[in-house]
Image (cartoon, rainbow over all chains, first blue to last red):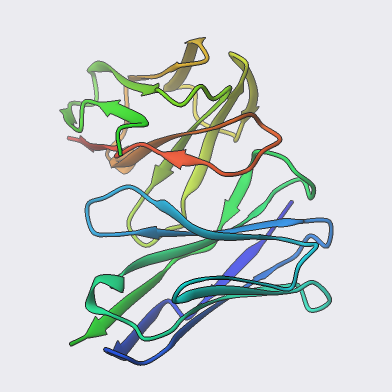
Length: 114
Length: 113
């Protein structure tokens, strides 16, 4: 099955700085990698995802990069704002290809200080 | 925010009680999921239903019993739980099992005394 490792477990940055969270996965057949944001007391919400046919995807201040050779993908947040403070989870499909079962990383607590 | 709803939002139960969690999705999806979220642990998949059929049971103890009467509703029946079952239980849905974007409900915060 899939094994997803996420680092760091906590990340503290100043407002305006960039934040990077990295995940590694074990199943080379995996081809879909979502990132979820969970604010305190709220549900996880998809913020960006990437499929294995591209190496990078951007949406305003957030971007995800994928290195299939090294089996890792990263979330990049630029110009961080206090409202970016949350727990971020990466995930990869268990069972390799497009399949509904996701294995989640352990989560990263991001704190953006004003 | 209202695409996937869960009730109740909070639940306190004794170890001998029987209770049920309810999830409803208004997105026209065909796949539904139950996850357990404990402090300092990653999201743990419990069950997967696709077109009302259970396709995954992730080694969940039998004191948790899922039910999916139709593609819009998912229940989790609880009986003789243990204190370590206290957690946030999240429901999610996706278009179908092959399309991976999952949309989560707000969760039920369960405390077992």
